[in-house]
Image 1 (cartoon, rainbow, N blue to C red):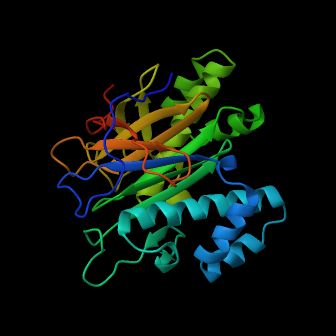
Image 2 (cartoon, rainbow, N blue to C red; image 1 turned 30 degrees about the horizontal axis):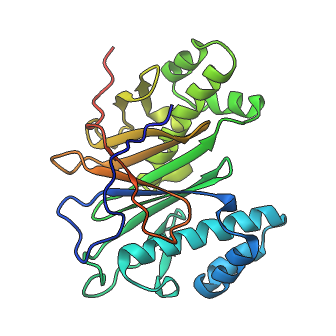
Length: 280
């Protein structure tokens, strides 16, 4: 089941960000750009570090996915920031999380901060962009090796492992595993911790269908500080989004499909209320 709504808003960025700027997601299949097109755009847009990374891939399919994902990042950030793709300066934290370098005096299209996060799996790249907040995203395809899924489960908290084991073996159990995995990845990426935060130090309680019923944060965080959303933007591709819950009202989420060449209207959703604590 896909959680998208028919109602849509204008996809084009305004001259100034609204008081309650939406969370923006771009879901882009790996075949959205022809290989020659992705290579051409990358030659003009990517920086020296990105070119060096692309050159280190052993397999051509992996290099093409990298080029598609990183041209997507620069194109979408260009639309939001009002800068040419090659003018964007992207740096990485000590843990490897990428950030857009702010400009003195702010961005041409308003504001002085854009945060973004990228994930790619299952033949898709997923990019999240927000203003004045942090964001973490993850995307996973259901077509995974059973042994790999069994290994993933061992990283979860005990109550999460019990919830997974309660489902019959097969697609239903696989879905539970990847729902938890995408949420955990999104949360740790939003915090900039990545693999530095063990997945058994925090836990989610999920509805059987979709939705976060409760969140037990790690020791250095508190419940109620995050909004989480689960999505299945195309069949058998699961995604999760994590953003801080600093806004008094739930912000909108705009979901775009494909490479951002045009200004097609996105699907719009409202992010859920902050996830409360897990109760016995």
